[in-house]
Amino acid sequence: MLGIRCILLVFFERIQPMTLYLLPLPPIGVAAYVFAFSLLKKYGESSPPTLHQLVLETCLATLVSGGAFLLFVSAILALVSLFR
Image 1 (cartoon, rainbow, N blue to C red):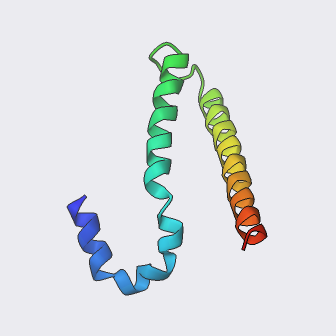
Image 2 (cartoon, one colour):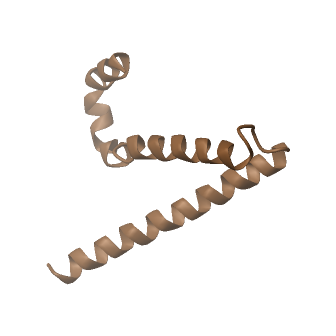
């Protein structure tokens, strides 16, 4: 983790315009951790029986999560612009 911080400090001027997009990464990492262990629990402490099933489960979770993110961001932006 210290190495990443050093890299960010060295390249801060180049990275600064993209920090808006980097902020969601830690919560996404936690969500991925929770999803992975929930998936293992669903399949009895082992991975899904086939690679196709694993890809399907992951894509479905990604689509649902992305859709929820889109709805939340849209609702927040609409509320902020409404009450501004």
